[in-house]
Amino acid sequence: MKRKLLIILLAIVCVALLGACTSEAPETAIIGTWECLDETHVHNWECLLIFDEDGRFEDRDGDGGRFHIEGDSLILAFDDFAPITVNFTIHSNQLTLTEEGFHIVLTRQLS
Image 1 (cartoon, helix red, strand yellow):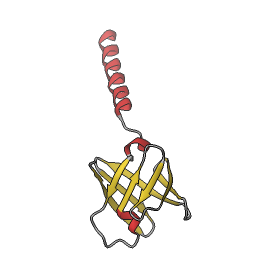
Image 2 (image 1 turned 30 degrees about the vertical axis):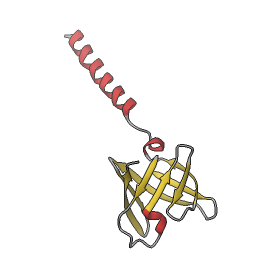
Image 3 (image 1 turned 45 degrees about the vertical axis):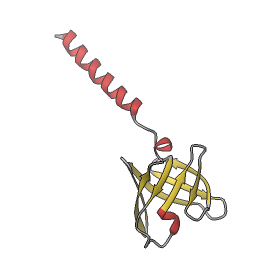
């Protein structure tokens, strides 16, 4: 009985560890080109964001800077503007940005 219980516990631990190893870190998951199809947004940068592996980003207008992630916050430190901090989530190919006054969903674009 003890042996059976030990085998079951080891199987659960292995599955949990495998899941943790295959989860993509937010810093990696956000890399790529994200675009929204709704052109009615006040801020054009919200409709196109490109995140590079080197920690840089660029928007539709060519403005850019460095980005980093702290928990569920995405900090966009523009080279020529004040930094912007937004809450974000990534589910499948959808990047959702939320902050007071706006909520936007961008879709990952395939290269």
